[in-house]
Amino acid sequence: MRALRILLIVVVILGGLFVIADRVAVNFAEGEAADRLKTTENLSATPDVSIKGFPFLTQVVGGSLDDIEVGITNYEAAAGNGGQKIRIDDLQADMRGVEFSGDYSSATASSATGTATIAYDELLKTAKSEPTQVAPGVTANVVGLSDGGNGKIKVTVEATVLGTKLPEPVSVLSSVTVIDGDTVRVKADGLPKFGGVQIAESRVRAITDFQQKIDGLPGGIQLDKVQAAPNGVGITVKGSNVRLAG
Image 1: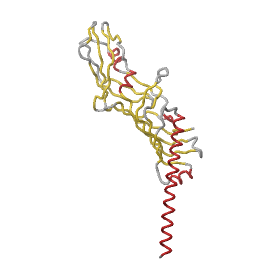
Image 2 (image 1 turned 120 degrees about the horizontal axis):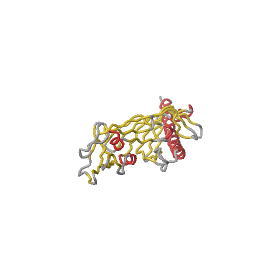
Image 3 (image 1 turned 180 degrees about the vertical axis):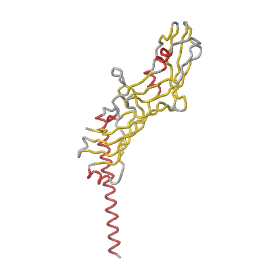
Image 4 (image 1 turned 30 degrees about the vertical axis):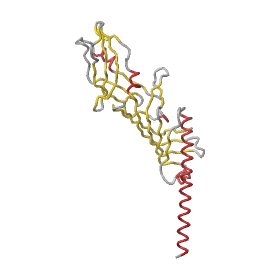
């Protein structure tokens, strides 16, 4: 019995040492991966990288990690408008099946899913914010975007008729969708009225409808779905063979 107790004590001690070594190793790897991702994506701040699964060391031996979670705040994505940028808030991505090199210089995930938000003030930069003529004597421009409820965006438009600004802006509920995996499109479900003036639908939609291309998301992930939310447009992203580093 005494020998069995000693054996159990030794096993517990070795197990504890293994856990400690495993956690030290995973913390080091998370830091290395975060630094590599910051360099690869030219980020202004170091992202959060969390390697899931236990034990980590056995995954390292196999050269593949089951699950890595990445968090990036205030990511500046290319807007496809002559070098302009659009801010992506709180990008959270879950990377699965990550193959990596021994020095962590390269890492690629077989698949990835995630979420992020585009604030309404960022999306507003794409809309017609400067007064534009939509009919003789009538100009209009978008002055605000907000949550319209039920997954819709409320587009608020200000209009001037024969030199007189309408006392109240008009608004329209719009659907928001993803096209081609890299573009957010906002399209009005109906048309606003500008002081009773008859205006061709195409001219009105030139103001109310717009789209924003978003290029260069981390690792080549793409937009999947979008939906209006209280603080902005919530987006989901997905990708395959997503490059984390290298």
